[in-house]
Structure formats: C-alpha cells, structure tokens
Image 1: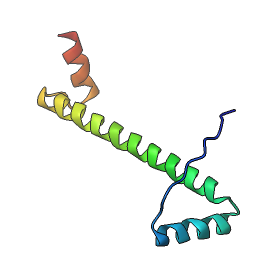
Image 2 (image 1 turned 135 degrees about the horizontal axis):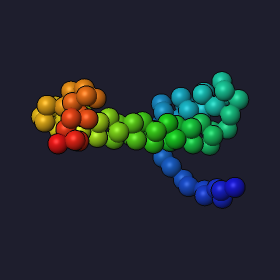
Image 3 (image 1 turned 120 degrees about the vertical axis):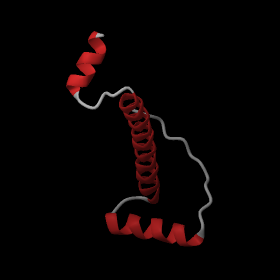
Amino acid sequence: MTTAVKKTISLPADLARDAEATARAEGKTLSAVIQDALRQARIERRRQEVRGMQGYWSRRARDKGILTEADLDRYLRD
C-alpha cells in the first residue's frame, strides 16, 4: 500500500470545472480523476519514448539494409 501525499495545485477555471464534472459523472473523487489523468499522461509519455526508440532503431536497421528477419539473421551471422 502506498502512502498518499497531499499537494495543492492550481488549475485554470475551465479545467477545474471539467475535472469536477468528470468526477461527478464517473462517481469518483476529484483526487481520483486527477490521479487517473496523471497516470494516463505518464503512460502516453512512455509510449512516445518507445515509439521514438523504435523509430531510431528502425532507421539504423534500414541504413544497414536490414528490412526482414532473414536480413537480420544474415547480418547477425556475418
């Protein structure tokens, strides 16, 4: 079990209204809605990092002529 840490944050009025409306609609606390949003943002950042790494290594492979698994096998044998 993790210990909760209380923080005070400031939100623009429209964002605060949206968050409160989401909490009401989903039957959650405002805190739970904010936590969910932060978790989703963290997941999306990690996805973008992975996409960036995949793009980098895909470009490197293409530059070496590795386009298929057979190409990779040949490259690794040489």
